[in-house]
Length: 613
Image 1 (cartoon, rainbow, N blue to C red):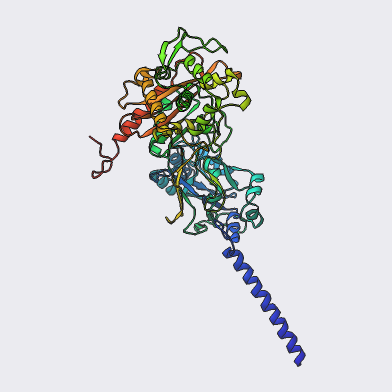
Image 2 (tube, one colour):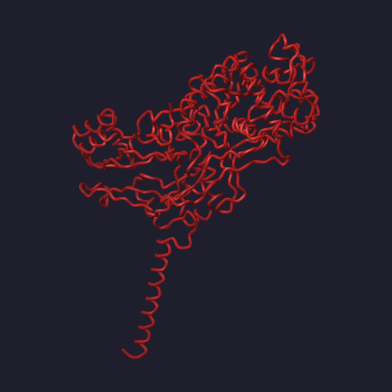
């Protein structure tokens, strides 16, 4: 070979070397995911995992929620019965099938039919639960001994366990390609997300979605031949991201024990539609949030369920709103607790009547509040400039969103933890507020007034703190999987642009709320409670198709002597007109459960679980 030939060969080899280096660099870039940001992952790794036809995701890799004590709310680990398609190969003997079916609590024929229909790996699901069925150790051992081909007992995480009941505050996941494209165009473009990716559809699954996406699933795959048939004896292989920082763990302020007590208190009262909110009286942390009807996160829209969170939906509050009217009168100087009114059963204008047909006679403003006299509060509201009612409501956190909010969170973007919270209303417009009939209706919590159970419970906390309004939080911190702190969410205030009410006003309203229980409308239901209690009941008339129905409310706190621990709002919807308010009794039931629960807390310096004596 001459000198020119050697030079051409050298150039060719050099070119091939450069192309090889470029290919290696490109492969490394995709495999290592270089240049990716917070919460991203190696794109090639994720695509190789998700595209395995014989893979079963035992963990989605999505961030999980826990209660304030660290107990899991989502992603509870279980043992699951997982089967891979058999592609025509025999599973095993009939006796082996019977043994596995017995362990699962089903018939051999039903199990056989399920196995034959499999096109993809699936987990066995019990008929009464939408998630994968959890096996006991004995069940798991029996399945293993059966030795069916392509069947394994694998660790698995149901996103939403059957117990505790799925929570509206946590929300659900859904497929929404349009929203996915709007929120995550970059991740779709570089194939980190597929268009079928599940994203938060409601609740904190939605508000925290951008932090909850993990680095991809952990997948268990079956060894198969070229035709996809399982190869006996070669076992399974597990693959996943393997990053110790992910998935993130969200510590909520919810307490599963208190959540259960609230659910059971509503069940004991026969409530089918409504809500209960329990706040920590110290800082308005959300300890429990119940919404009925229940939600099925695996089948949104299923008959008998409702994905709407009634605890943050605004409803007519009825006489509960008289606490605001009372505060507005005290703030404006138009009245005090001793101001006298006369009730003969009818107001004389606007068709407004008192619930007591014969009237209350002459009574003070404090007595009118305790007896929930509509005539006295209609007269009081008509004396007031409507601006005083609107401003006082705003100062107490009504007519606006109060849930925890940050203009700029750790990623520089805004964050509202309870994104679906409705602000509610006081007056529909300034013009409407000038009408006397509107103003009297507003004064007793009717007309255009709308308040959510969360706002109502928070109103009580505001009064307990001399008028300071908190922004109820439902998350305290977000941590990495290895325990490192990603973000801390501290309690914060939700001040009104109009300032706050005077501490003297707050104290007077609390005094009147105590009178509701000791000598007013809630005396029969609550006066004998083991804890001294205080609060305000409300019965809201509904319009439209529900005109013959009423919503029952009770908001209050306990204990009313010493240091209050809990502020509570109870809403029972769509009750027949004329039925006695059931919410006060439900409130009393819940407070008694909380009192007993507090007695069961461990005493410092004693063994866990020891009772206070």
